[in-house]
Each structure stands twice: as C-alpha cells, then as structure tokens.
Image 1 (cartoon, one colour):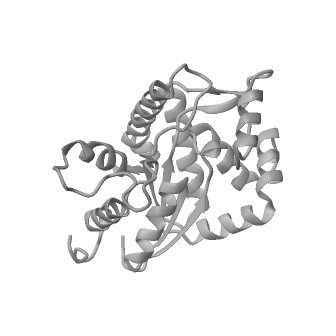
Image 2: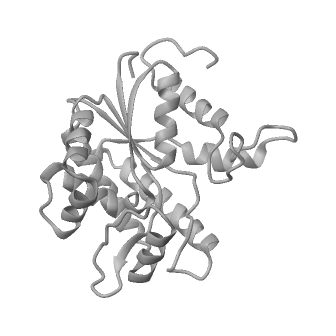
Image 3: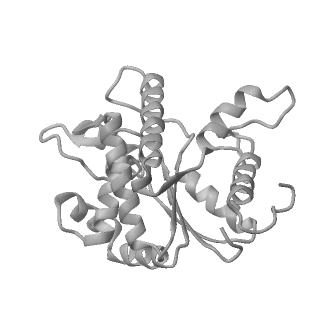
Length: 255
C-alpha cells in the first residue's frame, strides 16, 4: 500500500465506515453501500457477474432493475482505478425462492419490504465449500475489473445477522453464519491460486471486546448507542493497523 493507493470498499455499513476512516487518514477511498441482502457470498457472486457481463440472468436482470445501469457504470469506473479492493462479506445465508429454490434479489429498504421478502423467500445458509467457492469467484471477478496488479482484501463484517426465517433463533443463525463465513474466508484466502488477502476485522471487533477492562469505550454503539454499529474508535484502529501492516512507507502516526 502506497500513500497514493486508491481504495474501493464493497459491503454493508461496515465497509462504508472503513472507507470513511481511510479518507480521514488521508487516503483516496471510495465505497459502494451494499445492503445485507446483497452481501452474502452467493449474492456477491451475482453482483460481480452483473458488473462483468450485465443483465444476462434472472438475478442480474433483477439487480439491473433495482440498482440501475448508472450504478453499474459508476462501480465499474471506481473499480477500474482501484489499487486495493476491500470486500467485506456480511452474512452467510442468501434468500432463495420458496417455490423454485433459486437466489432471490430484492433490496429490503423498510419493514414492509422485509416482511414481503421473508414471506416469499427463505434464507438458506450455504456449506463452507459453497461459500468458499463463491468468494474465490468474486475475488477473480474483482481482479479482472480492478486496476492491473490490484490487491483484493477479504474481511468479514462483525455486525450480527438481524433476522432469520431459517432457524428458530437469530442468535443460532448468526453464530452459524459467522462461523461458516470465517472458515470460507480462510479456505478462499489460503489457496495461493486465488491471490486473496484476509484482514481480521471480525476478530479485532468480536475478539478484543472480550478482553477490554472496565471503563474502556464500548466496541459497539459508542457513537450513537446503536448496538449494531461498531464504535468509531475501533474502526479507526482497524484502518490504522491495516495501513501500518501493509504500508510500503513509514508507519502512520500513532502506529
């Protein structure tokens, strides 16, 4: 990573916060907000296929209809100049049709649309092998779309799964989701043929929170009391450590 490296982050709210922290650190960073419905490995695969080939399947045509050709062109433009692409995978399960079992794309932007989605589709958690294959496919697609020699970094969002209609408990569903994602990320990034890097944002947030002493700022909700939002001080730390670890220059101040 050089001081003039261009970053593009893809994912849900955690990827947005990473980009903003990179901007605050003086780096050129761009982000594309992707709702959780499009942030599973399978959904990411469909997204990259849409970017690469346009609306050629029912799923990519649904993305084209919902997001629009202008969004596709903007994302292609950003990726085309990216030296570092950070993909934050959010959840393991995808929505599939109750009738056909095929992947369903729909942006749930309110409780009414979420209820409709949960009524017409069911969440399906993939196997580790399925998820790892999707992540490898996404990485290869992003490499083709990014600037020559770009680095593709995979992270796992620490933000919990908000709901489920696959299991009786969202806590069980979230634990399974994060566990499968973590192993899938490991397998996809451990294979040299994929050329992917892994950065442990998930471990920093979920693991370090267990070891903070009394009086320390909270890991979640420190800025807005929303316990689904990672606190800003920790996002800044994650970005600072990332830049120090991969920097070709001197460590950033405070590193």
